Structure formats: C-alpha cells, structure tokens
Image (tube, rainbow, N blue to C red; front, side, top):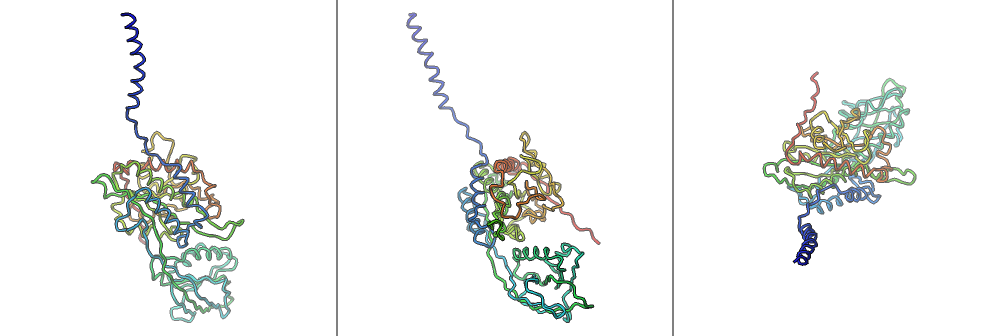
Length: 452
C-alpha cells in the first residue's frame, strides 16, 4: 500500500506542471495595443524626401509622383475615398501667368530687361503717364524699407509703377525669386490691377513720365490634394469629422549649392505628411473611432495655400470638430525632446484637451513661442480656422534660427526620427478624446478689425 501511495503521489506531482503548461497554452493572449510604427515613419519620410521627388513642387513631376505615392499608402491602409471622389486624389485647377514681353521707359530712357519685373495676370498692358487714369508711381528711395510696400507690389489695388532705388538690389532679387515661384492663382481672371517694379533711381525731373508695353500668357494647371477617410463607428457621431493634415509640397529645385540643387523638404513638410500616414495607420488598426477621421495631404501650401482653400470648400465647416495640422516636426522643439507647440493655443481649448489625454506621460504641448512669426495664419489650418473650426498647427520647428528652412540641406539626415516618432505618438494619444467623441474643442472666434 505504501509503495502504491508513493507511486500515486509521484504521478500526481509530475502531472501538475504539465497541466499548468497546457492551461497556459490554452489561455487567450491579449492583443497588442496599436502603436505608431517607427518603421512606417522612416520608410515614408525617406521616400517623400528622396532626390527622385525633385523637391515635390506642386506643378512639377515630383509633386505628382509624391501624390501618387501617398495615394498608394492610403490604398494600402484601406481608407475610403472622400464622398464625391473616384480616387484619393482631389484634383482642381489653378492658373499661372507668365510674362511674354515687357518694354518700359522712364523719362524716355529704356529700362534694362533684367531690372524690370512685371506682376500681372492681364493679357495686355499699354500704359503711359499721359493716360486719363494713369498708373500710380511709387518711389522707394535709398533710406526707405521696401518691405513696407510689399503688399502694394505683390497685390496692387491700382495699377502701379514702382521705382526701387538700386541700393535695394538685394530686395529686388528676392522679390524676383519669389514671383518666379508664386505666379499661380486659384481664379482664372486674377487681379484686374498690375504692378511693375523697376530697379531704377527716381529721375532728376519734376515729373516721372513712363511708357509700358507688356504681354502675359496664362496656362491652366492641375493641382491635387490626397484625401482618405475612416468613417466613424458611432452612428450618432459619424457625421462629425476630425481632420489630420499636412502639406506634401515643397519648393522644388533651387540654384545649386555645393553641387546640390534639390530642396528635399524633409522637415518642411515631409515630416508632417509622414505623420498623417502614420496616424492613419494607427487609427485604422485601432478601429474604434466614433467620429469620422479625414486624412489629407495638401498641395500648394508653399505657393499660396490653394490646396487647403479648395479642400475647405468641399466640407461643411460646422461638421468639422477639430483639425490637427502637422507642420515641421522633424527636429526637437526649443522646449526639448518630448515637446511640441500648438499655434493659436489661446484661441480655443484644443491644447488643454490634448494635454489632458497625455497625463502620466513625459510629453507636453506648449503655446506657440514665436507669436511674432504669425504662424497660426501661415499654414493650412488658417482657412478652416477662419471659418470657426478649432484648426491648429502642431510643430517643433525653431523657425527663427532654422538655417535649413527652404534650403537644399533640409534632408532626412538632419532630422531626429526617434523624437519625431514620439511627437506622432503623442498626437495619436492626445487625440483619443476628440476621436472618441468624448471631447469637443471650443470653436474659434477671430478678432474683427475695429471700426474707424
């Protein structure tokens, strides 16, 4: 009996671990929580900022190539198309005028072609100082600041001849460079007024006389945003939209610097566009968004914000609960790692709501530290913000000291991809309350100019 009992005991002893292991194998394994993919972040930004994209200019083949790449990413993720579209590309027209001919004399002396700049969308100009409604003459002397007259030159409200003193040759060159990249407009007709900027001193005469003859040609361009949608899961909330956006365009090809002419735009704004793709992937895997999520990569931010302007006309702004516009997050902010700032922080409670969802994490959102830069109105959030949407840009760029901005050196190698991934992760986590329909930011009220 004793031997039998020992045998039974030993049998029971050795069977216990086996049963425990079997139960362990049969126990359900908890699914891993979705996270922002560092691999996706690196792959997407390396693709967008590659030399082959030729700086992603909106009106060049590189811009089209970038749009097509983003479309394949949205297709890979299984996003739906924006209602009314048959593809992820939201195509719309824009118009570009180019100077075909220009001849100018000042007090009967011809002005050299390289010293004359015509800013016009009118097909034909034929002005003289003797016209009944003669063009205004604006003289900017050597002691004046041309910046004070920039609006009159770029967006004239009357036909204007500008005499810019030769001491401002550097300003004239910058203006000419800007105009060469910014002659696109959204409406076909364009400004009925034109300006001519001449690098020439005011003549020693009591009256400035002039003759102007000019022709421009206009061509129609195709621009395209890239838009994907994750419909809301809550029938009571699905009509409410949350927008995640960035602009995928950059400034294209520049004069060579040390043999490099491609302005890759890795930080500006391949970093933000990468965030949009990574966030779409994150929320698609999470698959619990109560509100409808719209992911959009805008075109033409660099040349006038035409992409976001067109996009905003396709939505009912009342239904847009919030807009997370992501602009240049590739390098640490002035506050250090695990931080970013929100433009227009004081205009709604968007920022505090986001921060509340990051409680217990090291990440924090700060108000815009560069109010003098007017960043709230300088990115694609501005169009919807002007319509009352709590639309803010999230950024880390130290723009006053960023020497790579709009240069050929804005490349992936200059970025901190680990910190960038942390920023995207923080955006994803901070958005949970808004995405779930549990938080709704206050609407934006813009200041109205005081009546005279």
